[in-house]
Image 1 (cartoon, rainbow over the protein chains, first blue to last red):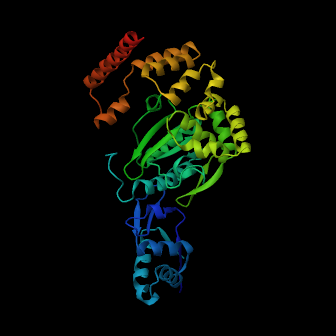
Image 2 (tube, rainbow over the protein chains, first blue to last red):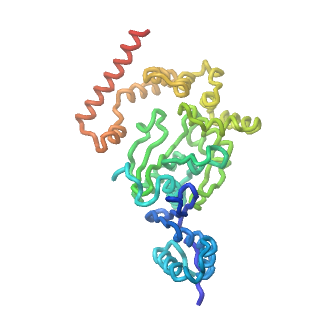
Length: 95
Length: 285
């Protein structure tokens, strides 16, 4: 069975160039209204931006790879692990 | 609680974006009408790029204030200043949250003379939606935002917002801002913001806005406020406020709740400062 992933409806997030930390792409997110602030830096931010596009894990991995000029096979396991964590803390929906 | 530390992870500018979304979600859940102002709520082109806010400003429908306060406090916001002590206009109060920082809740906007509930209706009438932290937030339309920025500048000497909000506006846009100011009874404050205050030289609030736009001593300010207070009740309220120590500000200054003795000491200081200003006037007058 193939799942699709997307950012949960109750998540607010921002990722803007002037908010990047140390030149690394950074995303800030939270579940509103009671969640804690979460920060995703570097490749974590790229995966988040890929999740904003939505799709299967393969779609998300491909999009993240394209943004970072990385090899899809080289990042597949790391992307899957991060997406699992994001699903576990309910900022990403798995359907 | 420590309002001087950063949030747990996010820098101030990032958490301001997220905090707008938090406030909007709270408002949505309780059917509270709010408009987001300033900072990331400002529409493109109306303020300098890259300018960052350190707090969230929202205007709430006055009759919905109790529901918004309950909502804010339900998720950990703590009230730090009150409406009667937050500013001379008694228009806003502040709440602090360890993760989201400051939220300034406004029930009116200084310079607007129309009844606050009616003024909110006018400002909300043409609202537009702006995504802040990917969350839909209602904000005043471009004309209202121009007026709000100019009115803010009128009481914040040296504020550069007038250049973009007014000077750079087309003649039609300026006409629309003037019409809105007339509807909101905000013409005197608008004139102070755009350098036309002398047109209102005989208006009761002329001296008040001249003070805010040009500066002066606290005594000048109080004299101007007394002139602008057109009823006996309003004047009496001002006198009472003049002698009252602002416990909220004293608390922030001390970093803890002031003791009774500290409030008394500050009271003596206020009286002495007022006396000194009077003496200075007599000597230089």
